[in-house]
Image (cartoon, rainbow, N blue to C red; front, top):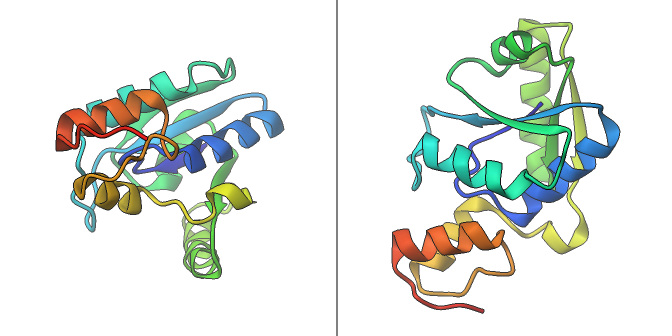
Length: 160
């Protein structure tokens, strides 16, 4: 499974999901519905719908939502691995700590890291949200349906 907030889904997320789909027979892209630390721009239903549209070209990927511990969700869906993308050393430090935490919760779930492709290593959902809020074109950073949703939500009206 590839868990995330996906607020919004970016081309970097899609790169990781597509690469995971080549490694595994079946991938669940799981949208975190709740968060103790993040205030999402899009609702959980909207994020699931945007992600679903963005991955519909991948036959072995499905989109689900979850509102529990990642390890509990992995057990619910029968996942044996959690796939995480890494952009920076800071990402690695955080994700490495989370992998150990999750391993203590469920030692049957492994964490697999996929390094971000160089063209997406700078990209984050928070950066996309901020750029869009200031009216910058984000079309090259997110799927077309997401760019449209950002323009509708934020009202930038600009395209690349």
